[in-house]
Length: 344
Image (cartoon, rainbow, N blue to C red; front, side, top):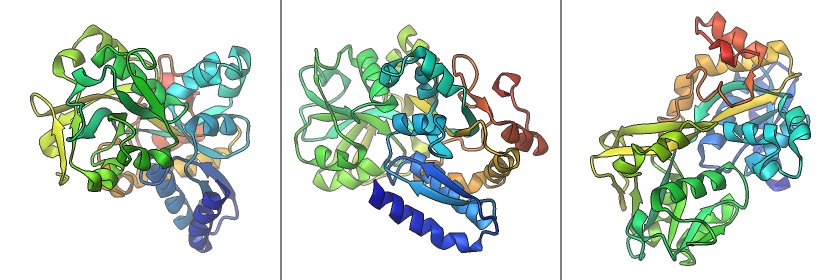
């Protein structure tokens, strides 16, 4: 982690000479080549270039830990799948040891700058694998996420709804850190992968050298079923539906859907800050996102479907966090209406 912190911090520090502000913001994000990484580093680059603040970004972090660090005031800006804010508020899931009372206290410190989606979820496998679709998962070994966090929870839940299987009972789930996944995918130790995916997906493109792959969309009948309808309404989750013909083609990858439409839940994430962040700082950072939303969406091919710039995405309902007052001011000055339920 220290090496990554130094390498990214130095890289952004080189740009920092153009910034007039002396404010240094620490930030935590996911591994390179992912939506959270690109969203955070793009924000950092824009903030530095516009003289808003300097950034020191630690990448390759687990969002579960990053959200807690942010809530405890140990870092200034963090990624956070919104499902984690819900779990933290309940002292549940990866925050069970914290407890409900402490979790609620911590999440009360969290405010949102902007939201976006992390991509979809899909089952994929090498064409040489014995897994030929959702019906072949039982009895197999499946890479289903990192050791803890929102991704693992979602991967297990979706696979159970679609395939009717439970991790540890009907199949063997394997968890490794994000950085180890390419090796695990290619070394033959798993039969298939149930993971978050983007379009195109860097994890898939990096491992296609070991053989052609197939990625499966959620079948239409399952998607329209009551269990999946309920699932996509769960905290921090939205539906992600689009025509496959609108996607760039990737040599060696086949995406399967019975009618050419991709269907899957998507995790809604946010760039979050501590409630005590200066009003003007939060306002300036959010205004930079609004003014440069096209930059975010075009920063990498997989960013095109992430909905950066949408207002209120994934907020309200059971999600306990709201926008920072400075963020609300930035949206309203831009003529964008913020839902009342997302205002502090």
